[in-house]
Length: 164
Image 1: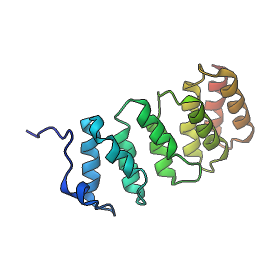
Image 2 (image 1 turned 135 degrees about the vertical axis):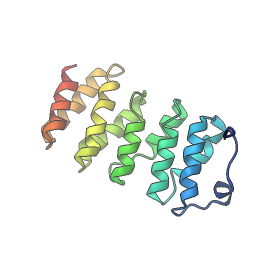
Image 3 (image 1 turned 120 degrees about the vertical axis):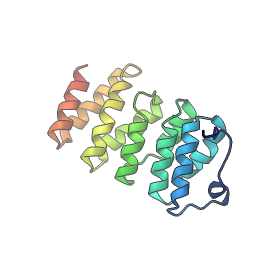
Image 4 (image 1 turned 180 degrees about the vertical axis):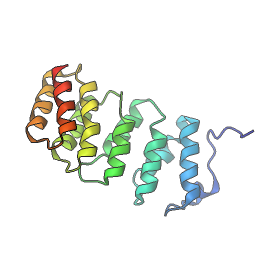
């Protein structure tokens, strides 16, 4: 039986072996699975890593936590021009969370300015899920996005979200 990972870091994390190191990916998964707040600083630090695979692993691990600190950390590292796989995983991890005003603005920017329809697809339910906090602002964003959306599937989602 495996012992709990809470608060423990493997030697690869402690040595800072970042560049494509498979044990790091496994360490990040284990740290996320622990759901220990003690591991948050290490996981959040990996969001700044130059290796997108490790950033994605950190986002996945952080997605297992449900608190404002994690939501804010993911939002702080979300950018309309970044790696589309990283954006997709970050947006998936934010599903069902309260984004706050700044988070809504950041996700709206991605919806309105990302060239990737897959990434834009994940912004729509996030904004729709935060519609109760500021319905007029969200409706305005959705309406603006409808005018420029090129994907029929995304346009359908926008229309449905706007109508709710």
